[in-house]
Image (cartoon, rainbow, N blue to C red; front, side):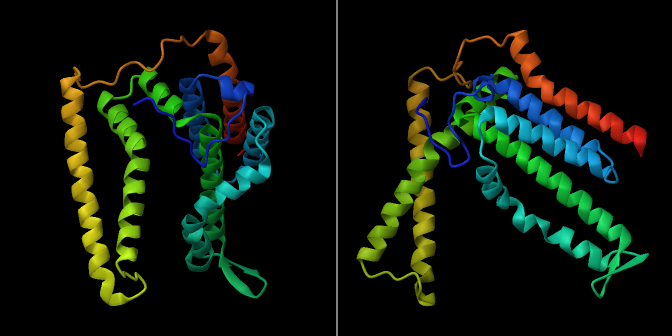
Length: 254
């Protein structure tokens, strides 16, 4: 169960950020996002300060900004609402390049876009500096519900197995003349999905029986016995302290 799994969002490294315990980084990322959410959307300069804090973390972690920017495009489908708000929002209206845009809609779109982008960048920073196994260890140390940690661990362990089995089934169908481009062959694809579900369910039953025969008691074994020191917490909370100062500044000045 402890096999490692690579992930396209993880950037291996040996920087101080990579070496921080996962639970410290999880708490820091969560508190950082809370600070962003609590910031009034009118505090434009404060959002720039958050980006500077993230850029400083990237510099310490040796994460290229281009690497981060390419993966931040994952939020592109979710900005549709932000694009529509200026067009459909209430009065007063603002004329810009021949378009009549809603003033409150523009402000609402800005809030959604900037807060969503900073949240995505914070999550990507956590994923880039923390392997999946360490994230599970961090959740375990933070006393996350045991069933959540167990489900996440098994999901990560067998996602690659199920994907490989799906590829084998697809190759088998293609070797027998299946062409997924033809609409009338959608039935074969649907039956393949159903067969994959049944195989995955049967595999899960066998794995569960094997776990019970080896003394499974409903909780994953402790993945590590290393202790998190106050120094780790001090280093990890330093960016959060800056973010907290920024959000206080935003409320004082707006």
